[in-house]
Length: 242
Ligand SMILES: *Cc1c(COP(=O)(O)O)cnc(C)c1O
Image (cartoon, rainbow, N blue to C red; front, side, top):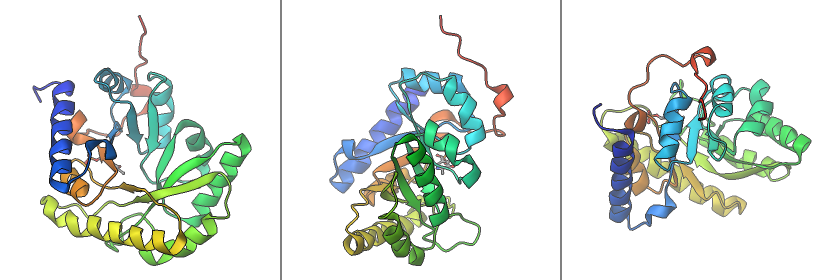
């Protein structure tokens, strides 16, 4: 890519604005999570210089050293599949978790937050398509989880997240986004839990997701370029502050 990171942020902001206009929404109702996985602290720092504050990571072992090398004012969200033995690190490094896919994980997060007296906003990841390979809870398991979660201290379910099956044509993602919004409305009505966040939409389909109500879009490639192999912690160069 010849364009600069600032150009790409400007272009994404313009596209968010246009999608919001089509949907009759205010652009402030959509938060952009810049997914920096596989890119080092240098890329994060450059994005921060473009005014970006909110970043997403999908692997704890990659994020832990990276976050320590990045500017301190940034806000980090965990967007990837999470194992229970990594929860202690996650509750200390991240401000929100998008990808909670079991009650056991929720209970572990609750226990970890209670140790520090903190509270973690989380989204339940929902497998709307029913694809076997995907992470996420099946929709029919969500109501019971919401009911149990209401009794857990230290976790606050603020919304739901989904990743539709990959499709070249973003129009193919629309039914999954629409379905998640409808399910969210049903679960909200049944449980009384607000579930204000809809975390949906990636580089290929974020405009469709916004049209269907996304409040958090998670963008990697369209900002940082194509990912190569996963970044190993040893490859991460520290930022030299001058
Ligand atoms: C990598 C990743 C993204 C970003 O994907 P792009 O297609 O590069 O925008 C979004 N969400 C999750 C959960 C991811 O792992």
